[in-house]
Amino acid sequence: MSRTTAAVDTALPGDWEELVTTAVLGTDRRAPAGVGPGRQAAAVLLDAAAAATVRRRAGLRPAPAAERPGSAPEDRRPALPPAAARRLAMLLADRPGASGTGRRGTAPDLMELLPQWLAVANARGFAPPPALLPALLDAARGRTDLRPSALRFAGPRALWLARLNPDWRFALRSAPGGGTSVPARHDTEGIRRLWQEGLFAERVAVLGALRSREPAAARDLLASTWATERAEDRLMFLDSLRTGLGPDDEPFLEQALADRSRNVRATAAELLSALPGSALARRMAVRAGACVAVDRTRDTPVIVVEAPHECDAHMERDGVVAKAPAGRGERSWWFGQLAESAPLGSWSRRLGGRTPREIVALPVADDWRSELHAAWCRAAVRQRDPAWSRALLGEPSAPEAGGPGAVSLAERAKLLGTLGPAERAEWVAGFIETHGLSEAFQLLGVCAVPWAAPLGRAVVDALNIARDAGSYPWSFSGVMGLAERCLDPSEAGRLDALLAVPDEPEDASPGAGGYWSEAFQRLVTTLRLRAAMLAELSPPAP
Image 1: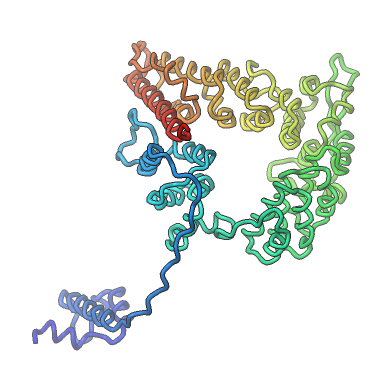
Image 2 (image 1 turned 60 degrees about the vertical axis):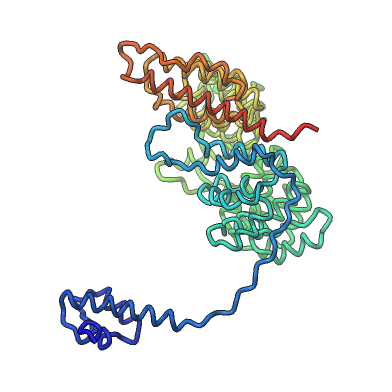
Protein backbone atom coordinates (compact mmCIF):
# COMPACT_ATOMS: atom_id res chain seq x y z
CA MET A 1 0.00 0.00 0.00
CA SER A 2 1.47 3.38 -0.99
CA ARG A 3 1.90 6.23 1.45
CA THR A 4 -0.82 8.27 -0.33
CA THR A 5 -3.32 5.38 -0.29
CA ALA A 6 -2.65 4.80 3.39
CA ALA A 7 -3.22 8.47 4.09
CA VAL A 8 -6.51 8.36 2.19
CA ASP A 9 -7.70 5.36 4.18
CA THR A 10 -6.82 6.95 7.48
CA ALA A 11 -8.04 10.42 6.55
CA LEU A 12 -11.27 9.39 4.83
CA PRO A 13 -14.17 10.63 6.97
CA GLY A 14 -17.33 8.62 7.14
CA ASP A 15 -19.46 11.71 6.58
CA TRP A 16 -19.60 13.43 3.22
CA GLU A 17 -20.29 16.76 4.94
CA GLU A 18 -16.91 16.52 6.67
CA LEU A 19 -15.18 16.40 3.30
CA VAL A 20 -17.16 19.38 2.06
CA THR A 21 -16.32 21.40 5.18
CA THR A 22 -12.60 20.65 4.81
CA ALA A 23 -12.68 21.70 1.14
CA VAL A 24 -14.51 24.94 1.93
CA LEU A 25 -12.12 25.91 4.73
CA GLY A 26 -9.04 24.89 2.76
CA THR A 27 -6.34 22.35 3.65
CA ASP A 28 -4.06 25.10 4.98
CA ARG A 29 -6.57 25.79 7.75
CA ARG A 30 -7.94 22.29 8.20
CA ALA A 31 -5.85 19.38 6.91
CA PRO A 32 -7.28 15.84 6.62
CA ALA A 33 -6.65 13.59 9.62
CA GLY A 34 -3.18 12.09 9.70
CA VAL A 35 -1.75 14.51 7.14
CA GLY A 36 0.02 17.78 7.83
CA PRO A 37 -0.63 21.02 5.93
CA GLY A 38 0.95 21.35 2.51
CA ARG A 39 0.53 20.18 -1.07
CA GLN A 40 0.19 16.56 0.13
CA ALA A 41 -2.96 17.49 2.10
CA ALA A 42 -4.78 18.78 -0.99
CA ALA A 43 -4.03 15.59 -2.93
CA VAL A 44 -5.21 13.46 -0.02
CA LEU A 45 -8.47 15.45 0.21
CA LEU A 46 -9.20 15.03 -3.50
CA ASP A 47 -8.46 11.31 -3.37
CA ALA A 48 -10.73 10.96 -0.37
CA ALA A 49 -13.51 12.84 -2.17
CA ALA A 50 -13.15 10.57 -5.21
CA ALA A 51 -13.31 7.44 -3.07
CA ALA A 52 -16.30 8.74 -1.14
CA THR A 53 -18.11 9.59 -4.39
CA VAL A 54 -17.63 6.05 -5.69
CA ARG A 55 -18.90 4.65 -2.38
CA ARG A 56 -21.98 6.93 -2.45
CA ARG A 57 -22.85 5.97 -6.00
CA ALA A 58 -22.29 2.28 -5.40
CA GLY A 59 -24.58 2.40 -2.40
CA LEU A 60 -27.56 3.85 -4.27
CA ARG A 61 -30.54 1.57 -4.54
CA PRO A 62 -32.42 1.53 -7.82
CA ALA A 63 -35.68 3.42 -7.59
CA PRO A 64 -38.91 1.98 -8.94
CA ALA A 65 -39.54 2.93 -12.54
CA ALA A 66 -41.69 6.01 -12.97
CA GLU A 67 -44.98 5.73 -14.71
CA ARG A 68 -44.68 6.38 -18.41
CA PRO A 69 -46.39 9.58 -19.54
CA GLY A 70 -49.59 9.20 -21.46
CA SER A 71 -49.87 10.04 -25.11
CA ALA A 72 -49.90 13.68 -26.16
CA PRO A 73 -53.37 15.01 -26.96
CA GLU A 74 -54.39 15.14 -30.59
CA ASP A 75 -54.31 18.46 -32.43
CA ARG A 76 -57.11 18.44 -35.01
CA ARG A 77 -56.09 21.66 -36.74
CA PRO A 78 -54.76 21.39 -40.31
CA ALA A 79 -51.00 20.96 -40.65
CA LEU A 80 -48.81 23.79 -41.84
CA PRO A 81 -48.00 23.85 -45.55
CA PRO A 82 -44.49 22.41 -46.05
CA ALA A 83 -42.98 25.75 -47.10
CA ALA A 84 -44.42 27.47 -44.01
CA ALA A 85 -43.06 24.69 -41.78
CA ARG A 86 -39.58 25.21 -43.21
CA ARG A 87 -39.92 28.95 -42.69
CA LEU A 88 -40.89 28.45 -39.05
CA ALA A 89 -37.81 26.30 -38.51
CA MET A 90 -35.66 29.11 -39.92
CA LEU A 91 -37.29 31.73 -37.71
CA LEU A 92 -36.83 29.62 -34.58
CA ALA A 93 -33.21 28.79 -35.41
CA ASP A 94 -32.25 32.47 -35.53
CA ARG A 95 -30.81 33.79 -32.27
CA PRO A 96 -29.93 37.40 -31.44
CA GLY A 97 -26.20 38.04 -31.54
CA ALA A 98 -25.40 34.73 -33.17
CA SER A 99 -22.98 36.42 -35.57
CA GLY A 100 -20.95 37.79 -32.69
CA THR A 101 -20.86 41.34 -34.13
CA GLY A 102 -22.95 44.39 -33.47
CA ARG A 103 -23.50 45.15 -37.16
CA ARG A 104 -26.48 43.43 -38.76
CA GLY A 105 -25.53 43.82 -42.40
CA THR A 106 -28.32 43.23 -44.90
CA ALA A 107 -29.75 40.11 -43.24
CA PRO A 108 -33.30 40.40 -41.84
CA ASP A 109 -33.85 40.03 -38.10
CA LEU A 110 -35.79 36.78 -38.20
CA MET A 111 -36.74 36.72 -34.52
CA GLU A 112 -38.47 40.07 -34.94
CA LEU A 113 -40.59 38.55 -37.73
CA LEU A 114 -41.70 35.61 -35.59
CA PRO A 115 -44.57 37.52 -33.86
CA GLN A 116 -46.09 38.43 -37.25
CA TRP A 117 -45.67 34.88 -38.52
CA LEU A 118 -47.43 33.50 -35.43
CA ALA A 119 -50.27 36.02 -35.73
CA VAL A 120 -51.00 34.96 -39.33
CA ALA A 121 -50.64 31.25 -38.55
CA ASN A 122 -53.07 31.58 -35.65
CA ALA A 123 -55.54 33.57 -37.75
CA ARG A 124 -55.52 30.82 -40.36
CA GLY A 125 -55.88 28.01 -37.84
CA PHE A 126 -52.80 25.92 -38.56
CA ALA A 127 -51.20 23.41 -36.18
CA PRO A 128 -47.40 23.34 -35.68
CA PRO A 129 -45.14 20.44 -36.69
CA PRO A 130 -44.58 18.39 -33.50
CA ALA A 131 -40.80 18.38 -34.04
CA LEU A 132 -40.68 22.20 -33.74
CA LEU A 133 -42.62 22.44 -30.47
CA PRO A 134 -39.49 22.34 -28.23
CA ALA A 135 -37.86 25.20 -30.16
CA LEU A 136 -41.12 27.15 -30.09
CA LEU A 137 -41.39 26.76 -26.31
CA ASP A 138 -37.74 27.78 -25.91
CA ALA A 139 -38.41 30.94 -27.91
CA ALA A 140 -41.48 31.74 -25.80
CA ARG A 141 -39.49 31.11 -22.63
CA GLY A 142 -36.96 33.79 -23.61
CA ARG A 143 -39.53 36.37 -24.75
CA THR A 144 -42.62 36.94 -22.66
CA ASP A 145 -44.22 39.02 -25.42
CA LEU A 146 -44.29 35.90 -27.61
CA ARG A 147 -46.01 33.67 -25.07
CA PRO A 148 -49.70 34.30 -25.78
CA SER A 149 -49.41 33.80 -29.54
CA ALA A 150 -46.80 31.02 -29.26
CA LEU A 151 -48.88 29.00 -26.80
CA ARG A 152 -52.02 29.49 -28.84
CA PHE A 153 -50.22 28.20 -31.91
CA ALA A 154 -48.52 25.35 -30.01
CA GLY A 155 -51.89 24.09 -28.84
CA PRO A 156 -52.60 21.33 -26.30
CA ARG A 157 -49.34 19.49 -26.93
CA ALA A 158 -47.37 22.43 -25.50
CA LEU A 159 -49.02 21.86 -22.12
CA TRP A 160 -48.29 18.14 -22.34
CA LEU A 161 -44.60 18.91 -22.95
CA ALA A 162 -44.52 21.59 -20.24
CA ARG A 163 -45.43 19.01 -17.61
CA LEU A 164 -42.32 17.01 -18.59
CA ASN A 165 -39.75 19.82 -18.63
CA PRO A 166 -39.39 22.33 -15.78
CA ASP A 167 -37.94 24.92 -18.21
CA TRP A 168 -41.35 25.15 -19.88
CA ARG A 169 -43.47 25.40 -16.76
CA PHE A 170 -44.32 28.97 -17.72
CA ALA A 171 -46.78 27.45 -20.19
CA LEU A 172 -48.74 25.96 -17.30
CA ARG A 173 -48.88 29.36 -15.60
CA SER A 174 -49.69 31.27 -18.77
CA ALA A 175 -52.47 28.96 -19.83
CA PRO A 176 -55.56 29.19 -17.63
CA GLY A 177 -55.26 26.50 -15.01
CA GLY A 178 -52.31 24.84 -16.70
CA GLY A 179 -54.43 23.60 -19.56
CA THR A 180 -57.81 23.39 -17.87
CA SER A 181 -60.20 24.63 -20.52
CA VAL A 182 -62.90 27.16 -19.73
CA PRO A 183 -66.30 25.43 -19.60
CA ALA A 184 -68.58 25.85 -22.58
CA ARG A 185 -71.13 28.67 -22.61
CA HIS A 186 -74.07 26.42 -21.76
CA ASP A 187 -72.24 24.64 -18.91
CA THR A 188 -73.55 26.85 -16.14
CA GLU A 189 -72.73 24.35 -13.39
CA GLY A 190 -69.18 23.84 -14.66
CA ILE A 191 -68.58 27.58 -14.72
CA ARG A 192 -69.88 28.04 -11.19
CA ARG A 193 -67.86 25.09 -9.87
CA LEU A 194 -64.63 26.36 -11.46
CA TRP A 195 -65.30 29.83 -10.08
CA GLN A 196 -65.82 28.54 -6.55
CA GLU A 197 -63.18 25.80 -6.46
CA GLY A 198 -60.57 26.70 -9.10
CA LEU A 199 -57.13 28.20 -8.71
CA PHE A 200 -56.76 31.95 -9.05
CA ALA A 201 -55.55 31.72 -12.69
CA GLU A 202 -58.51 29.50 -13.53
CA ARG A 203 -60.94 31.92 -11.93
CA VAL A 204 -59.46 34.89 -13.81
CA ALA A 205 -59.73 32.93 -17.05
CA VAL A 206 -63.34 31.86 -16.54
CA LEU A 207 -64.39 35.37 -15.48
CA GLY A 208 -62.66 36.96 -18.49
CA ALA A 209 -64.13 34.43 -20.93
CA LEU A 210 -67.63 34.84 -19.51
CA ARG A 211 -67.34 38.63 -19.49
CA SER A 212 -66.44 38.71 -23.19
CA ARG A 213 -69.60 36.80 -24.18
CA GLU A 214 -72.12 37.48 -21.37
CA PRO A 215 -71.16 40.63 -19.41
CA ALA A 216 -74.13 40.47 -17.04
CA ALA A 217 -73.53 36.81 -16.16
CA ALA A 218 -69.87 37.55 -15.39
CA ARG A 219 -70.82 40.44 -13.15
CA ASP A 220 -73.35 38.30 -11.27
CA LEU A 221 -70.74 35.57 -10.84
CA LEU A 222 -68.31 38.08 -9.35
CA ALA A 223 -70.98 39.54 -7.07
CA SER A 224 -71.79 36.08 -5.70
CA THR A 225 -68.40 35.81 -3.92
CA TRP A 226 -67.35 39.47 -3.75
CA ALA A 227 -67.66 39.81 0.02
CA THR A 228 -65.33 36.86 0.71
CA GLU A 229 -62.57 37.68 -1.80
CA ARG A 230 -59.15 39.01 -0.80
CA ALA A 231 -58.47 42.67 -1.57
CA GLU A 232 -55.81 41.93 -4.21
CA ASP A 233 -58.14 39.42 -5.87
CA ARG A 234 -61.05 41.86 -5.83
CA LEU A 235 -58.84 44.37 -7.63
CA MET A 236 -57.93 41.90 -10.38
CA PHE A 237 -61.49 40.70 -10.79
CA LEU A 238 -62.85 44.23 -10.89
CA ASP A 239 -60.44 45.08 -13.68
CA SER A 240 -62.11 42.44 -15.85
CA LEU A 241 -65.24 44.63 -16.00
CA ARG A 242 -63.45 46.94 -18.43
CA THR A 243 -64.49 44.48 -21.13
CA GLY A 244 -68.05 45.28 -22.13
CA LEU A 245 -68.36 48.07 -19.55
CA GLY A 246 -71.86 49.53 -19.66
CA PRO A 247 -74.57 51.29 -17.64
CA ASP A 248 -75.79 47.98 -16.18
CA ASP A 249 -72.50 47.72 -14.26
CA GLU A 250 -73.11 50.96 -12.36
CA PRO A 251 -74.95 49.55 -9.29
CA PHE A 252 -72.20 47.01 -8.65
CA LEU A 253 -69.45 49.62 -9.11
CA GLU A 254 -71.24 52.08 -6.83
CA GLN A 255 -71.16 49.45 -4.09
CA ALA A 256 -67.44 48.94 -4.74
CA LEU A 257 -66.87 52.63 -3.95
CA ALA A 258 -67.35 51.68 -0.29
CA ASP A 259 -64.78 48.86 -0.46
CA ARG A 260 -62.21 48.47 2.32
CA SER A 261 -59.34 48.65 -0.18
CA ARG A 262 -58.30 52.06 -1.49
CA ASN A 263 -57.09 50.51 -4.77
CA VAL A 264 -60.43 48.81 -5.32
CA ARG A 265 -62.26 52.08 -4.65
CA ALA A 266 -60.01 53.94 -7.09
CA THR A 267 -60.54 51.35 -9.83
CA ALA A 268 -64.32 51.40 -9.31
CA ALA A 269 -64.30 55.20 -9.54
CA GLU A 270 -62.22 55.10 -12.73
CA LEU A 271 -64.65 52.67 -14.34
CA LEU A 272 -67.65 54.75 -13.31
CA SER A 273 -66.07 57.91 -14.70
CA ALA A 274 -65.76 56.11 -18.05
CA LEU A 275 -69.58 55.94 -18.05
CA PRO A 276 -70.61 59.56 -18.74
CA GLY A 277 -74.18 58.87 -17.62
CA SER A 278 -73.26 57.45 -14.22
CA ALA A 279 -74.12 59.17 -10.96
CA LEU A 280 -70.43 59.46 -10.09
CA ALA A 281 -69.71 61.18 -13.42
CA ARG A 282 -72.50 63.66 -12.71
CA ARG A 283 -71.11 64.35 -9.23
CA MET A 284 -67.67 64.91 -10.69
CA ALA A 285 -69.12 67.22 -13.35
CA VAL A 286 -70.64 69.40 -10.62
CA ARG A 287 -67.38 69.53 -8.66
CA ALA A 288 -65.16 70.17 -11.68
CA GLY A 289 -67.61 72.69 -13.15
CA ALA A 290 -67.52 74.70 -9.92
CA CYS A 291 -63.75 75.09 -10.42
CA VAL A 292 -63.82 76.34 -14.02
CA ALA A 293 -65.48 79.34 -15.62
CA VAL A 294 -65.05 81.74 -18.54
CA ASP A 295 -64.06 85.32 -17.73
CA ARG A 296 -65.90 87.47 -20.25
CA THR A 297 -64.79 90.81 -18.77
CA ARG A 298 -61.53 90.71 -20.73
CA ASP A 299 -61.07 91.59 -24.39
CA THR A 300 -60.75 87.87 -25.16
CA PRO A 301 -62.67 85.21 -23.18
CA VAL A 302 -60.32 83.39 -20.81
CA ILE A 303 -60.81 80.22 -18.80
CA VAL A 304 -60.18 80.79 -15.11
CA VAL A 305 -59.61 77.98 -12.61
CA GLU A 306 -60.24 78.00 -8.89
CA ALA A 307 -59.02 74.66 -7.56
CA PRO A 308 -60.75 73.06 -4.55
CA HIS A 309 -59.46 74.08 -1.12
CA GLU A 310 -60.06 70.70 0.52
CA CYS A 311 -60.66 67.05 -0.30
CA ASP A 312 -63.69 66.03 1.73
CA ALA A 313 -64.90 62.53 2.56
CA HIS A 314 -67.40 62.50 -0.31
CA MET A 315 -64.63 63.26 -2.81
CA GLU A 316 -62.49 60.49 -1.38
CA ARG A 317 -65.36 58.03 -1.63
CA ASP A 318 -65.66 58.92 -5.31
CA GLY A 319 -62.04 57.99 -5.90
CA VAL A 320 -60.17 61.25 -5.35
CA VAL A 321 -56.82 60.49 -3.73
CA ALA A 322 -56.26 63.05 -1.00
CA LYS A 323 -52.47 62.82 -0.63
CA ALA A 324 -50.60 64.44 -3.49
CA PRO A 325 -47.40 62.88 -4.87
CA ALA A 326 -44.09 64.49 -3.99
CA GLY A 327 -43.59 67.73 -5.87
CA ARG A 328 -47.29 68.28 -6.63
CA GLY A 329 -49.46 70.88 -5.00
CA GLU A 330 -52.52 69.48 -3.24
CA ARG A 331 -55.05 71.77 -4.90
CA SER A 332 -53.81 71.13 -8.44
CA TRP A 333 -53.69 67.39 -7.67
CA TRP A 334 -57.32 67.37 -6.51
CA PHE A 335 -58.44 69.53 -9.42
CA GLY A 336 -56.78 67.26 -12.00
CA GLN A 337 -58.62 64.23 -10.63
CA LEU A 338 -61.96 66.04 -10.72
CA ALA A 339 -61.46 67.32 -14.27
CA GLU A 340 -60.40 63.95 -15.70
CA SER A 341 -63.42 62.20 -14.13
CA ALA A 342 -66.06 64.65 -15.35
CA PRO A 343 -67.96 63.75 -18.55
CA LEU A 344 -66.43 65.64 -21.45
CA GLY A 345 -69.90 66.54 -22.69
CA SER A 346 -70.48 68.64 -19.58
CA TRP A 347 -67.77 71.15 -20.54
CA SER A 348 -69.66 72.43 -23.57
CA ARG A 349 -72.65 73.25 -21.39
CA ARG A 350 -70.43 74.81 -18.75
CA LEU A 351 -68.38 76.90 -21.18
CA GLY A 352 -71.03 78.60 -23.27
CA GLY A 353 -71.95 75.86 -25.73
CA ARG A 354 -68.53 75.83 -27.36
CA THR A 355 -67.24 72.85 -29.32
CA PRO A 356 -64.23 70.86 -28.06
CA ARG A 357 -61.93 72.65 -30.53
CA GLU A 358 -63.17 76.05 -29.40
CA ILE A 359 -62.76 75.11 -25.73
CA VAL A 360 -59.20 73.84 -26.21
CA ALA A 361 -58.31 77.01 -28.13
CA LEU A 362 -59.34 79.30 -25.25
CA PRO A 363 -56.47 80.79 -23.22
CA VAL A 364 -56.27 79.67 -19.59
CA ALA A 365 -55.32 82.12 -16.86
CA ASP A 366 -52.67 81.76 -14.17
CA ASP A 367 -50.67 78.87 -15.66
CA TRP A 368 -53.50 76.36 -15.29
CA ARG A 369 -53.47 75.46 -18.99
CA SER A 370 -51.14 72.45 -18.73
CA GLU A 371 -53.00 70.98 -15.76
CA LEU A 372 -56.43 71.45 -17.33
CA HIS A 373 -55.46 70.16 -20.78
CA ALA A 374 -53.63 67.16 -19.32
CA ALA A 375 -56.79 66.23 -17.39
CA TRP A 376 -58.86 66.55 -20.56
CA CYS A 377 -56.38 64.29 -22.34
CA ARG A 378 -56.82 61.58 -19.69
CA ALA A 379 -60.59 61.99 -19.87
CA ALA A 380 -60.63 61.70 -23.68
CA VAL A 381 -58.64 58.46 -23.51
CA ARG A 382 -60.75 57.03 -20.69
CA GLN A 383 -64.06 57.97 -22.30
CA ARG A 384 -62.88 57.07 -25.84
CA ASP A 385 -64.07 60.43 -27.16
CA PRO A 386 -62.72 61.03 -30.69
CA ALA A 387 -64.00 64.62 -30.95
CA TRP A 388 -62.07 65.70 -27.88
CA SER A 389 -59.05 63.66 -28.96
CA ARG A 390 -58.97 65.52 -32.29
CA ALA A 391 -59.24 68.85 -30.52
CA LEU A 392 -56.41 68.05 -28.12
CA LEU A 393 -54.22 66.58 -30.85
CA GLY A 394 -54.62 69.65 -33.01
CA GLU A 395 -53.42 69.75 -36.60
CA PRO A 396 -50.42 67.50 -37.31
CA SER A 397 -48.78 70.35 -39.22
CA ALA A 398 -48.94 72.73 -36.23
CA PRO A 399 -45.55 74.30 -35.45
CA GLU A 400 -45.50 72.98 -31.89
CA ALA A 401 -44.81 69.23 -31.74
CA GLY A 402 -46.46 69.02 -28.32
CA GLY A 403 -49.88 70.02 -29.65
CA PRO A 404 -52.37 72.51 -28.28
CA GLY A 405 -53.43 70.32 -25.37
CA ALA A 406 -51.29 67.22 -25.01
CA VAL A 407 -48.43 67.65 -22.57
CA SER A 408 -46.19 65.09 -24.28
CA LEU A 409 -45.86 62.84 -27.27
CA ALA A 410 -46.88 59.96 -25.02
CA GLU A 411 -50.22 61.72 -24.40
CA ARG A 412 -50.62 62.23 -28.12
CA ALA A 413 -50.03 58.53 -28.73
CA LYS A 414 -52.81 57.68 -26.28
CA LEU A 415 -55.18 60.17 -27.91
CA LEU A 416 -54.46 58.68 -31.33
CA GLY A 417 -55.54 55.31 -29.96
CA THR A 418 -59.14 56.60 -29.76
CA LEU A 419 -59.26 57.28 -33.51
CA GLY A 420 -59.82 54.81 -36.34
CA PRO A 421 -56.81 53.17 -38.02
CA ALA A 422 -57.05 55.19 -41.26
CA GLU A 423 -57.41 58.53 -39.50
CA ARG A 424 -54.59 57.63 -37.12
CA ALA A 425 -52.21 56.79 -39.98
CA GLU A 426 -53.11 59.94 -41.91
CA TRP A 427 -52.51 62.15 -38.86
CA VAL A 428 -49.11 60.59 -38.09
CA ALA A 429 -48.10 60.93 -41.76
CA GLY A 430 -48.86 64.64 -41.60
CA PHE A 431 -46.92 64.94 -38.35
CA ILE A 432 -43.85 63.28 -39.90
CA GLU A 433 -43.93 65.59 -42.90
CA THR A 434 -43.73 68.59 -40.55
CA HIS A 435 -41.65 67.39 -37.61
CA GLY A 436 -39.62 64.50 -38.98
CA LEU A 437 -39.04 61.05 -37.59
CA SER A 438 -37.21 61.83 -34.36
CA GLU A 439 -40.41 63.18 -32.80
CA ALA A 440 -42.69 60.53 -34.29
CA PHE A 441 -41.30 57.23 -32.97
CA GLN A 442 -43.87 56.88 -30.15
CA LEU A 443 -46.69 57.79 -32.52
CA LEU A 444 -45.71 55.14 -35.06
CA GLY A 445 -46.10 52.46 -32.40
CA VAL A 446 -49.89 52.99 -32.19
CA CYS A 447 -50.52 52.73 -35.94
CA ALA A 448 -52.10 49.61 -37.40
CA VAL A 449 -49.86 47.10 -39.19
CA PRO A 450 -49.22 47.06 -42.09
CA TRP A 451 -48.97 50.83 -42.30
CA ALA A 452 -51.41 52.53 -44.63
CA ALA A 453 -49.90 53.81 -47.89
CA PRO A 454 -49.73 57.54 -46.87
CA LEU A 455 -47.94 56.69 -43.64
CA GLY A 456 -45.52 54.30 -45.34
CA ARG A 457 -44.64 56.90 -47.94
CA ALA A 458 -44.10 59.56 -45.27
CA VAL A 459 -41.71 57.30 -43.34
CA VAL A 460 -39.70 56.31 -46.42
CA ASP A 461 -39.49 59.92 -47.62
CA ALA A 462 -38.26 61.07 -44.20
CA LEU A 463 -35.60 58.34 -44.17
CA ASN A 464 -34.53 59.38 -47.67
CA ILE A 465 -34.23 63.00 -46.55
CA ALA A 466 -32.09 61.94 -43.59
CA ARG A 467 -29.87 59.91 -45.91
CA ASP A 468 -29.41 62.83 -48.30
CA ALA A 469 -28.49 65.04 -45.33
CA GLY A 470 -25.53 62.76 -44.60
CA SER A 471 -26.67 61.62 -41.15
CA TYR A 472 -25.69 58.22 -39.81
CA PRO A 473 -28.56 55.69 -40.06
CA TRP A 474 -27.91 54.60 -36.48
CA SER A 475 -29.86 57.65 -35.32
CA PHE A 476 -32.89 56.18 -37.07
CA SER A 477 -32.33 52.52 -36.21
CA GLY A 478 -35.53 52.36 -34.14
CA VAL A 479 -37.66 53.73 -36.98
CA MET A 480 -35.89 51.50 -39.50
CA GLY A 481 -36.64 48.48 -37.33
CA LEU A 482 -40.31 49.49 -37.16
CA ALA A 483 -40.37 49.96 -40.93
CA GLU A 484 -39.03 46.44 -41.46
CA ARG A 485 -41.91 45.03 -39.42
CA CYS A 486 -44.69 47.48 -40.30
CA LEU A 487 -44.31 48.72 -43.89
CA ASP A 488 -46.62 47.07 -46.37
CA PRO A 489 -44.56 44.40 -48.18
CA SER A 490 -45.90 45.73 -51.49
CA GLU A 491 -43.72 48.83 -50.94
CA ALA A 492 -40.52 46.83 -51.58
CA GLY A 493 -40.45 47.58 -55.31
CA ARG A 494 -40.67 51.33 -54.67
CA LEU A 495 -37.50 51.22 -52.54
CA ASP A 496 -35.15 49.82 -55.20
CA ALA A 497 -33.96 53.33 -56.06
CA LEU A 498 -32.60 53.74 -52.53
CA LEU A 499 -30.29 50.73 -52.59
CA ALA A 500 -27.35 52.40 -54.32
CA VAL A 501 -24.64 54.10 -52.27
CA PRO A 502 -25.40 57.85 -52.54
CA ASP A 503 -22.89 60.58 -53.21
CA GLU A 504 -21.86 61.99 -49.85
CA PRO A 505 -21.98 65.76 -49.36
CA GLU A 506 -18.88 67.44 -48.01
CA ASP A 507 -20.30 67.83 -44.50
CA ALA A 508 -21.66 64.25 -44.33
CA SER A 509 -20.52 61.77 -41.73
CA PRO A 510 -17.73 59.57 -43.19
CA GLY A 511 -19.05 56.32 -44.61
CA ALA A 512 -22.69 57.18 -43.90
CA GLY A 513 -23.74 56.49 -47.49
CA GLY A 514 -22.56 52.89 -47.33
CA TYR A 515 -24.39 52.30 -44.08
CA TRP A 516 -27.60 53.79 -45.50
CA SER A 517 -27.37 51.55 -48.56
CA GLU A 518 -26.93 48.56 -46.29
CA ALA A 519 -29.91 49.58 -44.12
CA PHE A 520 -32.19 50.01 -47.15
CA GLN A 521 -31.06 46.68 -48.59
CA ARG A 522 -32.01 45.05 -45.30
CA LEU A 523 -35.37 46.82 -45.36
CA VAL A 524 -36.15 45.62 -48.89
CA THR A 525 -34.97 42.08 -48.12
CA THR A 526 -37.16 41.98 -45.02
CA LEU A 527 -40.23 43.25 -46.87
CA ARG A 528 -39.81 40.61 -49.56
CA LEU A 529 -39.32 37.97 -46.90
CA ARG A 530 -42.55 39.06 -45.20
CA ALA A 531 -44.36 38.82 -48.52
CA ALA A 532 -43.04 35.29 -48.98
CA MET A 533 -44.13 34.38 -45.45
CA LEU A 534 -47.68 35.50 -46.14
CA ALA A 535 -47.77 33.55 -49.38
CA GLU A 536 -46.48 30.40 -47.69
CA LEU A 537 -49.21 30.63 -45.04
CA SER A 538 -51.99 30.99 -47.58
CA PRO A 539 -54.32 27.98 -47.72
CA PRO A 540 -53.70 25.73 -50.73
CA ALA A 541 -55.93 26.30 -53.72
CA PRO A 542 -58.81 23.80 -54.02
